[in-house]
Image (cartoon, helix red, strand yellow):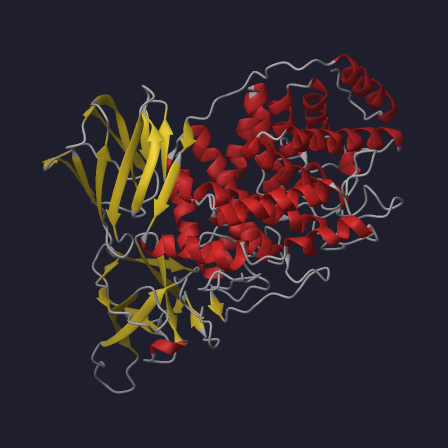
Length: 626
C-alpha cells in the first residue's frame, strides 16, 4: 500500500477497498519471540495466594452482564463504559489460562456470546450513539472489544468470534473512509487513545493474513508522525514528559503525555514490528521504555501524576497529586512483558518484578476484590471512585490485566532451553528444544529470603540451557548445580547453564537480600530502604516514633543496613523488619540508637479494616558536622 506525505481520506478508502477486495489470506512474515509462556503453572506461597484472591474475588465476582448493558443501549456521547468489558474479559482469559476451571470457562462462553449478540449488521460493537461514533472514547472502547474477542479466539479457535472481530475492524476502516476523517484526529490525547487500536489490528492480521489489516496498521503509524500527531517514533528520543507543551485542557486532545495511552500505542507498535521486522519500530519502543524507566519510574515501580508523565522520578519523595495510577502500573508491566518475550533481556524482568511486588500488589486489596486508583508513596491507600455508572473504575478493571501476566511467564521456554524470570514456588510445565514436556519445580519463600531450590523432572535426559535471572540488585549471588558452585555470575544478566539435564539434577540459588539505602533530593534529604525487589515503608500500625520524624539511618560504608526479620503473625503485614536509627538529641550528648519497624510497601496502609498512614521516603536529619 502506498503512503502519503499528507493524509487524503478519499484516496485512503479507495486503496483500502481495493486491498479489501483483492487481499487473500497469506501467512504473515513474523519476528519470533525469544521466550514463550509456560504450558501451565501451579503457583503456591504468597504470590499464589494473591493470584487466587484476585481470581475468586475480582474475576469470578464481576457481574459480566452489567458490563454488556451499554452495548445494548448505545446512548453514550462522551464516556468510556465500553472499555470495561474488554479489560475484564482479557484478564479473565489470562486467569483461565493460569487456572482453567469450568466455572470461569462457562462465564467466558456466555459473556462473549452476549457481546456478539449486540453487534450491528454493519459490524459495529460499541455504546455510542450513531452521530457520536468515532468521537471521544468510542474507538478506544472498540479496541478493548477487539482484544477481548481475539483473546477468546486464541483460547477456543471459535470461527464465529474471529468473524465478529473482522466485522468490527472492517466497519471501523469503512467508517473512517466514509466520513473522510483521520483516526489520529479522533478521540483523545493526540489520537493516542483511538490509535492504540493498532495492537488488536496487528493481532487480527497475524491470525487472518488479510492484508487490509496490515495496511490499516501501517496507516495508523504514518498518521502518528503527521502534523498534530503524537510523534511516537519521531519523538522517541525525547523525554516522555517533554514531548509537547503543557495543554490548556489536561484531559483533552492536545495532551501528549498521557502515560497509559502512550504505552498502549507502543504495545501495538511492537506487534507491528513482529509483522514487518522494521527496526525503527522496535527501536522507538526500546528508547521510550528506557526513558520512562530513567525519568518516571519510582522506587515502587510505577509513576505518573494525574495520569500523565511529568518527570516524576526526581520528585517522588514529595507529595504528588493523583500519583501512580494503577492503569499505568498494569500497562508498564504489560509493555515490559512484551519486551521481555521479544528480547529475553533481564532488565525487563527486573522491572516487572519491582512493579509486581510493590506498586501492583500495593494497589490491590489483600482479598483481591478491589484496586486503588492511585497509590501514593506517603499517606493513605484509598478506594477510587466509580466511573461511568458502571460499579467500578478503569483501574479496578486494569489491575488484573497486569497481575495475570505473571503466572505463565515466571518460567518460560527459550530458543535454547528454558528461562527462569521470577522466583515463585510451584510447578511449571514447558516444552524443551527437542519437544518433550519438562516440569520445573521451584521451592522458595522468595522474596522473604533469597534462597531458591530448583528441580527438573524429565522423561529422558536432554541437553539444553537453563537461564536463571540474577537481579541487578543482587551483588553477591551463588548458584550450585548438584552441590557444585557455578562460576561467572553477573548481576543484571541471566546465568545460562548448559548441560545434559536429568531428573536427578538439583539447582540451588542464593540471592543477596541485604537492605540498601537509597537517597533522594539535591541534598539527600530523604532516604528509603529496599531489600531485594521489595521497597520498605513505615506504617503507623507498627508504632515507634512518629512516621514523619527525621531519622538518621545506620549503615555501613557501602550503604547497607542491618535488617532483622520480625514475625508478622496475623497483623496484616506480609513482611516486617527492624533496624536501628539515630534520633535527634536535645542534650549535649547523643541519644542511644533506637529500633524501628518497617514493612513491605504492598502491606503499608493496605488493610481491610481501617486506613493507616504510611510513608516510603523518610526525612533524613541534616547535620552539618557530617
